[in-house]
Length: 305
Image 1: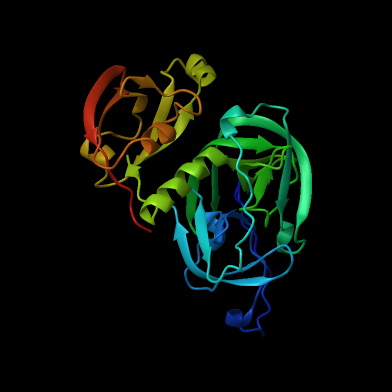
Image 2: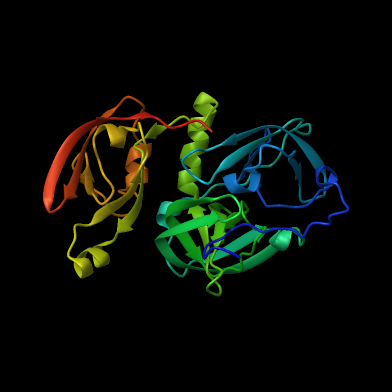
C-alpha cells in the first residue's frame, strides 16, 4: 500500500539473497560543488544501517565519506570521499522565486531505480503547493510547503534529482509524486536548498532556528471560504520547543511573525524562520477561539538527527 504522496519505492526481495550484499539504485542526486558535494532527498539516504555510494552519469563509482541530513526539510548532502583531479563540474542554480506557471522544465533521474539518466520534460503546473509526503514503511509523514508542482514525468527513483529550467539551471529538487493522480509531481524550490547549503558551508551542519510546529497553510481562498484568518493552522507542537514554551496549541492559527503576514513564498512561516538566527527573539501573533494573542518567543536550535 502507498500513501497518496508516497515518494518511496521498494525492490522485491529475494529471500535466498543476503540483504547486506545487495546493491540497487534507490534515488537520484546532483553535484552542487566541485569538491564533491551532492544534493539529494533526506528520505533517499534515511537508513543509517546501509552503505551509500554515488554513481555518476558516466558510470564511475564514488565512495561517500559523510552524509548530512537536514532535520527540518527533505534534504541531504553527501560528501564524495575522493573527488577527481580538478573536481566535478557542478550544476548552476537558478532562482525559484522567479518561476511562473506554464514555464518549461526538465526532470532528470533514475525512475523505478532502473532507468539511469532518464530525461523528461513538461511545464510548471502550480506554485506554492503544500503537500504531505511520507512512507507507511518508515512510519512518518513530512510536511512540504511551497513546493513546485510539475507535469514532467516523475516516478519513484527520481527523488533527489534536479528539476531544470530551459537554461539548464536547477530550480528544484524532485521530491514527491501523487499516486492518486497522473502527471502530478512535486519539487522543493532551489532557493530553499541554497539556504541550507550556505548554512552548511558556514557551520558544517544544518544548524538552524526551530519554532517547533507542524502546520497546514491557510491560503487567501481557504480563509475566505472558511471565514478564518489567513496564515497557518497549527497541527502539532513539538515538546520542549520554542512554540511549546510559548504555550502555542494545536488549533491555533499563526497569522504574523514580527508584524509580517504569513503570505507567499517569501512570507511563509518556514521562510521567515529560516532568515532568523538561533537565540533571536521574535513576536508571534496567533488567533485562538477568535482572540488575537501576541507573544515574544526565543528561537532555539533545530533538533539533531
